[in-house]
Length: 163
Image (tube, rainbow, N blue to C red):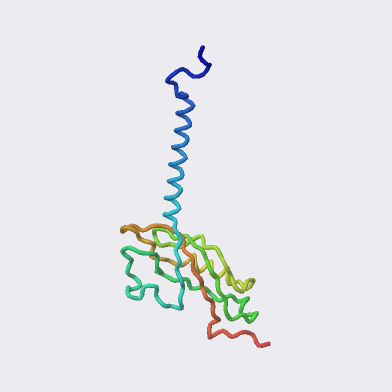
């Protein structure tokens, strides 16, 4: 007498097929997620007191292939609150999204030193008005995320209040 179970040659039928299809879908989703993360790689751009990132290229010449570079650097206003408080300098690190067109948007403050004087807000406004030549891979512009630091220095024509 044989034991009860699936007939000879039956490998589980629809249940096994559904399990294999689910596993394949998970693998495809994982591969898509890895490709998406790779296409949204983060880049570092540094504002270095008006020195071009690529001094061998004219400022209005787009890159052929390479990382993003400034087309229009952020130009923040020095916050009035900082002037009134006598704060003469600050550093604000931003994280922003770059579009294929070179537009910069969705800037967020990563670090602000010192806090509470309006430097972060001024940096975000300036970051969102800036533009980059986007990252180019195989001749095609790509969107991504950039991280950079804006260094605030009180302008020479503004002096802190005497006191």
